[in-house]
Image (cartoon, rainbow, N blue to C red; front, side, top):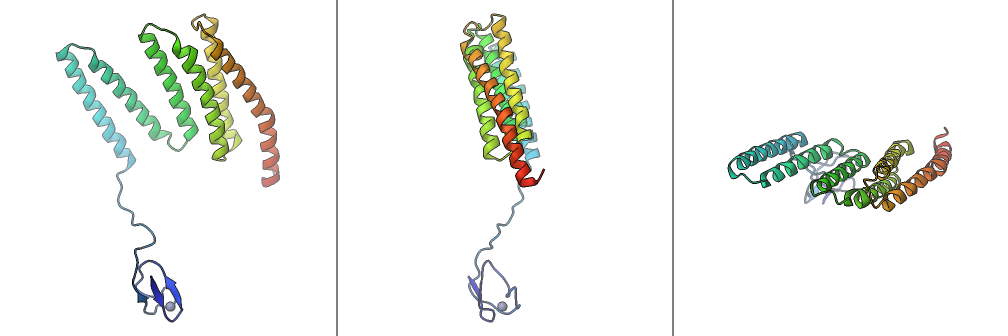
Length: 216
Ligand SMILES: [Zn+2]
């Protein structure tokens, strides 16, 4: 640490002279308090690079599919496309955690539905994955809203969306596609009650709190 004998102050970092009196300093200079910012690669160029790699891999897999005459290159292509779309989603929604998680969970459910269908539709995607994923999404959204102190109006639209998704499951139940409907029906009922609770008590609480603090 450096020291100004005139002002009798310690000075952090590395200074040529005293910032107060411009006088000479004694002692050893230390490393600067603020980190030196190194030019970072922009995220946009990372997305570009990733897109290029994904495209190259897809082209290579198409060539492999043409020559080897097996199915696995198509699986690699599908996974690459999913991974690429996912990277773009993370990039564009990185400032909105709730929206990112909502989109990710919906995409995950759709992927599970697709896989389930491809393997003869055992029904596990509708019976177990969708109800538990939507329930988990609702709880996560509420927790993120509380923990990151988001405004109630910004969160409630996602809760409505979650409940809407829960109700969409009931179409499969009504049509008899979902042969084990208990998780879907129970999850939808629980989420509807939870949404009502948030609307009845959450609104009032938030309103009184905002009225108190912001004089609305
Ligand atoms: Zn000084």
